[in-house]
Image (cartoon, rainbow, N blue to C red):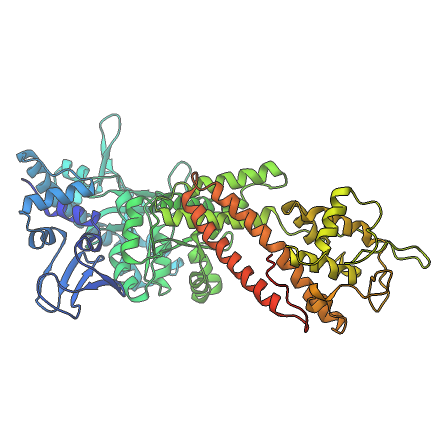
Length: 626
């Protein structure tokens, strides 16, 4: 079969070697590589390394070395063609058929490299010659150093439709067309594709010229500013990143790779000393390009212009990346100031300005939230609901279940904080007490009567609760504490109102307390006492804030803690019940939420126990539970 070197390069590019090896060997991260105990000889100290960027494994102990194909042959014991077929199937590639025509085509493809390399030499010579003066002046105005121009291979395509056939006479017309250097119009006339443009070679991961990009010097009506080679047997723009062969070694040193919008941005960064930058080639980032980036670093930095087009580019990249997210594999995003590209920013503010931005990128989820939030006005409930729907639609595209669950949770928290901000307390107003006004007194154990105007149910529950030895001791103590310090009722009105919605038994008691708050006697030493003059409350339900000898300020703060505990537990229980109810429709999110709520409930239980032990030399509450 015609298995060419180019086809094997493509196969290796589609296989993540560490993932293949980890099917049978335990590997751990070691910087930019993976390490483990060598499977080819016995060892206790790991000396076996896998490098995804260079696409090989190597053992420093026994010298075993190879790529994905040799791994399948040497470790799995497959024959060469069986290894190729298995890897091709997992990579979604067709194994070349045993066709002589295919073999000839592969040979021709290899020779296309000769065409592109020769074309590059021609363009470089043209730039250095008399016809390249205007192009040299343009590059000088851009501030590109001579060293950068040589490193990136700048050239010049003269404004001549037949320059290449005359210069490259060793290649037939079909070879020039096959390499993307020539084109034909509807009349069949053949002409040079690139004319009157500054030329840049586009190279593969091995540094071989496979295509070109050209930029016009002056803006002309109806003429594209940038022109790239078409897709050919050598060049697939969706699988190629400009400057990858230079950026990959630099990224291994910096631990970072920067993705900018175009190749002139890459060169501007390199001219400023930032060597770890790449760019797509006239298209949005593709899935294959993202895979190439993730082989270099775990979180590439996408750097986009600050205008609307840059924001759209960021969202396109995010949408492509979401289904591919995996543990320790994401994106971060930098948005430049509006109206500035990397070259403009460096020239106006210096290299330090862009380095500072690159050092503090926004996370993928932060950018997703910000872009969707700012996409349109959110001044109606319907618009806010639309925001949530758009965000959750993005989340649903994530394939990894754990990451999807975590994104759903964080997006939900962000939306809740945005759409339901905390409201200011709106406690019911309480008219001031008028001297001489008759006050209705709460009854205590042994008291002769209950307040007037209560319903029979509320009267019975209030009597039962305020009596000793019953459940809900904390509620009983809070009500008694508020009776002693009625000025605290307004402070806790909102919290207690929420409790009435969660606890039916507590509701009439709290509502009665609100009614009576307007007429409670707040004169010292105690707010309320029974007709016999016995101070309220009786000792058998005494907490620290009910101790007459306690400092009033400290007592009120402890009362506030009691109210908080009283309200938190039923709220958490209600939230837990709602979360359990949606388990079937959202098992991952429900489980994570249940775990969080149960931990909070345990914390509340601990606080309740500690609170119950803090008494002011009083009688214990016995076996009553909250």
